[in-house]
Image 1: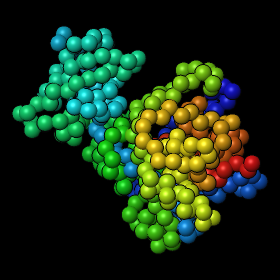
Image 2: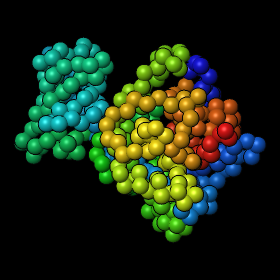
Image 3: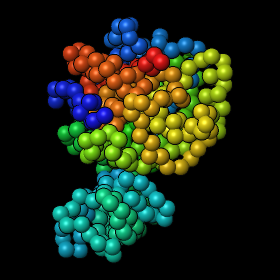
Length: 348
């Protein structure tokens, strides 16, 4: 199986550069198993496609303004993209710089304070931050909230604006730590959540801190040679109990986004969902049987990406590629600020 098996033609103008004014106004392509036909509706119509007792599972991670700028002692400019917050004002980060600094090197931050290079692991650097007390920063998190810039995905070809700080965040975000939004959740607003609750739909949450690696292209041509980036997740006991009760009552578990699928599948032990907190490098592609969810709401994903492979494992590769061709023909909006799909699993 090669990454080229998951390619499709996408006109660049269909890549959404800005969000819609209303979150739930995004279009939604419903993809049932064949031979049933696709349906072109809107996210606000999700209420009609769910049943009382179904469980929507959201990722409650909160995006941090993870991009900082500074200069090395030599004067060379440095762009810092935080990948992971660690303990004691430390972080794992990618550095955009002409010559990579060595351990012991220091980066003077434009926002005040400095970052010390502690070490390197592949493309990532281990940094310790010394915030500037003059600005009231007594922690890295405060520094980022004051001076960090939102790391919009690379296919959004503009600088982040003031509106993005709110719009590139789900309304239920609460656990700080992601550098990219769980984008399927961006379609939900308070009005839609209220309508879903009024229909008897249940809600649950996991946490998976989405890392910058989610945008990294596959370098290996063979799918089996790809090594996934690591992300931290937490599937709590309360969510596990909700899933078990939902299934026992004959209702469905609906994942809002691929990050929820990755989290739940990482927490499966001997065919049963168990509480789990820790790292995952799970790579889901066709041939893998997803057991934890019954429906999947997701955005459209990049060609040849691991996320496109995940949704192909759930709904079938040919069915997904046909749905993507339909979406292109119908001028859907693609990627983070784009439209959504409601996927039913491929028939066994």
